[in-house]
Image (cartoon, rainbow, N blue to C red; front, side, top):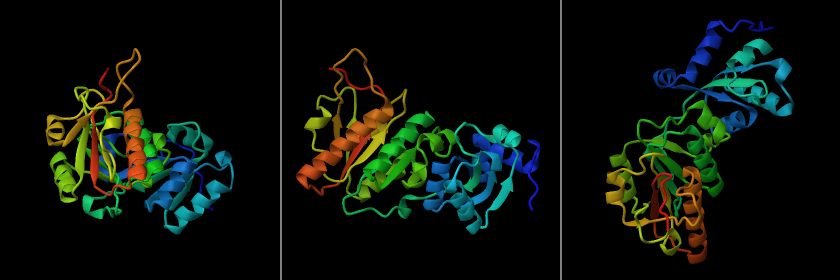
Length: 285
């Protein structure tokens, strides 16, 4: 029998909770995954689990047992902890007694197998974990090929990104790279870029978004950099008819994404297209 950990000062417990700090995640290449749905998708996505902390008193049903067995099959260390210790470790209330330390699934652009009609999202400088998580959920629902992340401020494996994405950060290939590498890759793949700008006269539903698409989002405050805007083939705006002068970043991405999907279905167009969208600051008409 493995002894249940009852002290929050235990070195293994401290090692896990230290991963709440981005510096620790960057230095170790590890991350926290908390919750049944998130862990199920992490395991499905091939993420390597190093340690899985579990609290017997908080386990709810068969899903948790499946995760424990899957982690054990990976030779992960299974560590029982008391309710007190688990509550000290948890950063949410609905994780159902499971917290894992896992290896960050690092990928490069060369790792991405594009479909014949690829769909790509590029994110530049997004700071809010909730926005990135919501974008990942939309990307997963739409079946995008990958998300490219540009900018040092964006932390892909922030626990709140994992939570907001409900684990889809593990089902959608995510690549962190530079703006120049992203642009070169898009050109190499023959992908036409379409940028959302508050100054664009062409509204997004009047633009040809048929064919494979990549939606590139700018930061919440700064929008897209001049580099992205200058490299865009077409700029489009999302019209605002009400009193508010902006849309949520993730919502703007989803609007553009599903318009591209609609046009691709209607046109049957296989010409590659990349959508480059700015921040929350959307054109007002």
